[in-house]
Image 1 (cartoon, rainbow, N blue to C red):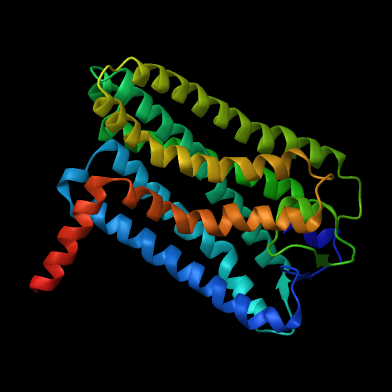
Image 2: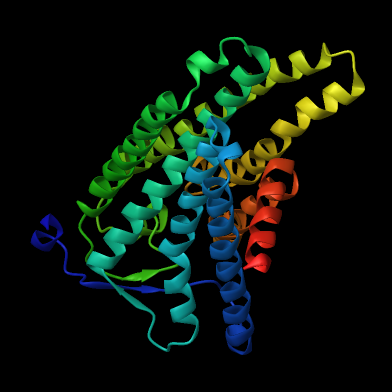
Amino acid sequence: MEHLNHSSVTEFVLVGLPHPEKMKIPLFILFSFIYMCTLLGNVLLIVAVIESSDLHKPMYFFLVNLSFLDIWLSTVTLPKMLTNFVQNVTTISFQECTSQLYFFHFFASTECFLYTVMAYDRFLAICRPLHYPIFMNLTVCRKLAVVFWFSGSLHSMIHTTLTFRLPFCGPNRIDYFFCDVIPMLKLACTDTTVNKAVIITNIGAVALICFLMILISYAFIVSKILKIKSLEGRHKTFSTCASHMISVFFYYGPPVFIYLSPNSMDYVMEESIAVFYTLVTPMLNPIIYSLRNSDVKASLRRMKCDKLDK
């Protein structure tokens, strides 16, 4: 690793979430519950889609990808956080920190691109229904999956490389609950102007552009829905998009605020926002998609009945 040539720091101290000493155990229980709910909810959603032939459609193919990403997005940060709640020493090695930063941005940026593709899928299904089987079939979905997974990996590699090429001479205290780009830049013993510029253009702007593309897709969708004369038809069409819109709102807003203003946000506020979109949103997604989707609920009921019959 190139950092060995110019960095004297071999490990970092993760400060974690600010909390009084007496809250360690309650917070450990709370975040353990969040993690278990995230794993259980997303695994159930994946199994429900795989087990039901009726759900072998593009929309649910992307939903499986979303659940898979949510599982790993939480796993990158939560287990280490839980360990730090019950340990006196909250260190993380240089190599572990590098891996955590890479995989966090890999899964987070891939999910960002995935939400954009999911919006495009809904646009085609509602606004171009006759062309939908041509432009959005399972073969096309697999190719799109390769594109957004590769794009997420490349995006993360750029930031990981730029961040850990910087020299770290001390201090080694990370005022955050995981190794992220902005807290790491604060520890570098050199000018980080270029890195901050890349953050604004490559993280904040990419997220913002994807969000704008989603808004454009939904502008066309809403326009199409308003042209439907039947109230029942409007409601049915809108319900197919509502879950995705809620997830997008929970996921896209927080990172844009964090990464577009790397120096202006209060530390506690920044961590609170990060906790929501990295830990809470992955837990909520399977609830949002299952409660608002009759096909998923039907598949889950069949799974329950089959288990009872056995």
